View: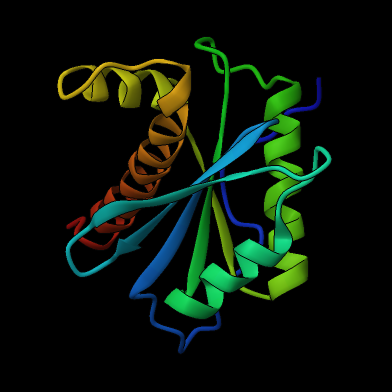
Length: 160
């Protein structure tokens, strides 16, 4: 398995200030999406899109980009607990590159090990989780991924 490390797919120009980002929890069947704000370093789950013929629903993604007008995108890369990449890591990385290629926005990747597990645990505290509400897990996982990236940016910008 080739090594992939979280980072940048496309860089914003030096003068571009990022205020709004859309975050993605890429999956083989579904993609969870959240919106995040750099001002508050917080994210809100938006929705989960079903893939169409094993491909992202590019039309719906484009509609969300037009609606929210983010300055950047964030994609979670799922790694094993030991940090090794998997086939899904490669697929999520490919998705991040395709987002950049299609929409020309800077795309940042962040490790998202256990984000879906954490999302499910949070949702178990508020409601029962079953097959009918897996979409809730995906969009909450996207929010957690987005908040991880936002916190990393905050930490980077506030180091002495």
